[in-house]
Amino acid sequence: MKREDLEKIEAYIEGTLGSVETKAFEEQMQKESWLMEAVREHKSFVSHLNQYKQRRKLKDKLEQYHNELGPVKPEEPVKQKSLWSRHWTTMAVAASVALITASTFLFSWDAVRPGKNKQFAYYKELKREVEKIKSNQNVILNLMGEEENAPSFGATAFAVSTNGLLATSYHSIKNADSLTVENRKYGRLKVTVAFYDEKYDIAVLKIVDKRFKKFKSVPFKFSSRPIQLSEKVFTLGFPRSDLVYGEGPVASLTGYEGEKMMIQVAVPVNPGNSGSPLFNERGEISGMITGKHLKEEGASFAIKAEAIVNVLKNEVRPNQLNLIGRQPRPMQVKKAEDFIFELKVY
Image (cartoon, rainbow, N blue to C red):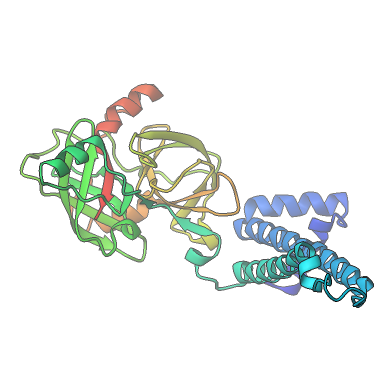
């Protein structure tokens, strides 16, 4: 980032820009997503620095208080207590403040410094860790001498062709020993990894369960139109064991740190939403949820449909039919949900 850009960002945050310059700067932010992200990160950094200053002030006051106590007079040796035993609460607070101050400052700088790996900065992947709590069914199986292993992670997958291929996030299935998918219509089905693209965090699964034949049809297809800023989108996924709906506008045409094959959407998502399809209002898939911003509520990221299609077309022809495009939203959801699965990773 150029020095003049940084100076302008600081002036904007401090409110020292004139009204004309402020308006021009805000218009520039709307056009250039990197500038908006830079302003947000700088605000966060300044906020942490201010917290550091406040905690430093408190620490200095506590140290001044300790110095004013002076040495303990040994007038009654038998009843004399050490400085630690008489003021252990205050000193413990001081020590805690010092530790928190140091930790907060280091975290702030580490999180915003350029080149920081996204997984350890403000970007969070959304595979869901599954608690190993046995259901009543598992209890019965245990009594019968059988046991069902609990999955390590949960995510979402969706159908992309009638022959049982499903798309999901690569990070959700990486290093998996075995995989299953499940929904109300088809129950639990065994799947394997057909192929993947680690660069774009895309994996394609194949249903290999003997009970599964083929989907008669898949009611949605990938959008071939470029997605638009502020366009309304919605998602269906499994942040818990039931299918969850979320909606919101497209907030940016690039993803985390300006990634061009991703978009940012103002849709609330949670761990387990990795691999959730992102639909436009025509019922077409515009992308797939992969992660969210840790510091911004509702700032979620999705890989664009273009990237998923590019991965698929080398191996299979994606579904070309859209049977829900002219349906009202409740009907779109009802028809789509049979082809969206909870992914369990073992």
